[in-house]
Length: 333
Image (cartoon, rainbow, N blue to C red):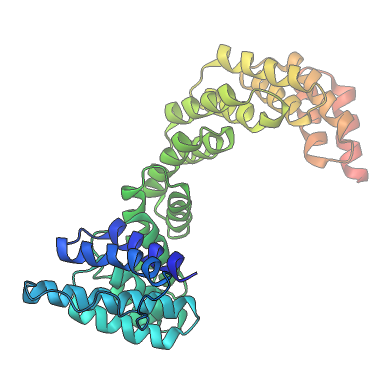
């Protein structure tokens, strides 16, 4: 168990911070030391005191680094033993000796957070250099526990920049910019999310946002991409979004083709009847519109808006009896 902890600690140091030769030798001695202690007759040493004495050749800086490393490794063991307050003292001592150490500061931030000392954790987090994705995720969690939205956004943007494949940071940023009325910023991260996920739902969401912002060509492209990933009944929103964009762009023939595909997908889909009806009304083709308006009322006979539409369209086709019948139905309702 002790060997596992020491190997883990040595790996953490080697992963996060370049070491001097003296410190590297010390880290390696921590792995070799416990093995030699298992040999019969070997002299045992107190925990954390392996190879700490150093060399007379150490420079003052190397001596401080060695002592910082000692406190850090003992702190990790104490933390594993759930002795958090004692571990904190060790990490604080280690950082005082080696304030540029990434791994020590990160351990200190995490320990402050576990003890509920969020202000101290946040203070140290601002000094953490260089940034690593996992560290940033921990820092973001710290700030999300407060109302410090600006700080959360700052670190989320940093994480999105650092980790080009991170989806969570982009989703949070989209949510934040939506809530604070910054559609252009939200749109940028929606684009990144769609490209990352290659999911038809993400492209639909992007298309709707582009549509609302008036970027019709962009919206049309997004809905088309959505349908490339899913063209079945699950993606009816992709079809309806594409149809809306085409209608707005006044590309009638393409709109009609898209409507036909939607109706072929589900002939009983009432919104498709309504959209086909609207399409024909816009083109002044009331006889064709009447067919789809009848289908709509047949499917939802108590919908007053549908009945009213049928009455108006019937009037425009000179089907006066049908028109009067619809308005009498409205009066009766």
